Picture (spheres, rainbow, N blue to C red):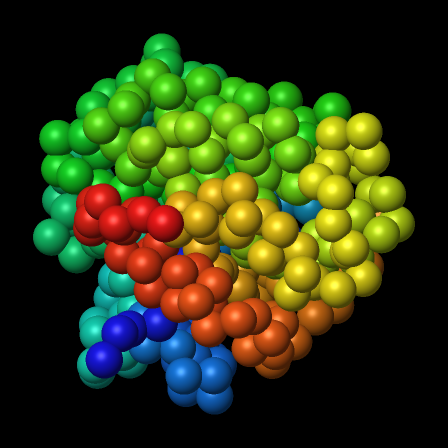
Length: 314
């Protein structure tokens, strides 16, 4: 029987988010497994939250500052703690941990820690916006991180952005990084913010997959012309009041390189400016609306291609 995957979930704690009054700020392995059980998801790719304890949570909460603590390395504790939690709770080994990394800071220290974890991880994950670390650095200061991914055949998941003020995770920069490392399999998250041109560019790249993480929130923001979504002139032509039809429209461009990811628990997000609240149930309901061939492509064929390198493609 074919396995069904959720390729984008978080497990852990973000003390900085909690202190700043942002939500969500935590999710446990047990919670994630319960959601999967409720919706017949066999496997999930998971990774820590995005502001690790190596950064000063008080400075982030009080002043919005990203300050690496003395003597610390980004994600020096979170990756190992995630592996430990999965070992303790996930008896059936349904969760596939990815190790988070910073593209620019303390690269040698990160490499040393990551190499010690390679037997327990399924790949690498970067969310460069929260930690204000430019994804472009993977072509310079952080190049050895991608060299390790290539050497060890580790898939890489990247957060993406189109918000003009986001200098750290622009889709264009993510695509450039993917082009610079053609032997690494990349998943560029969040449907590339529905940017039609970037979706077409991704479809032409053999080493690029795309996930739909936080799909309902993105459809809601598209209907409101929110700035985190591609502007109207660049946005994929689709009916954003019908989220399942939007998935089909993106899938028509990407085929088996488009994957389902819930972004649990970040299908919801509340901060100083944005309030969008959805649930795993809501995201799964949209998935259930898809025609079976599209659902199988997004939940099985696509994820297995990204994670294992299988070349099947529609």
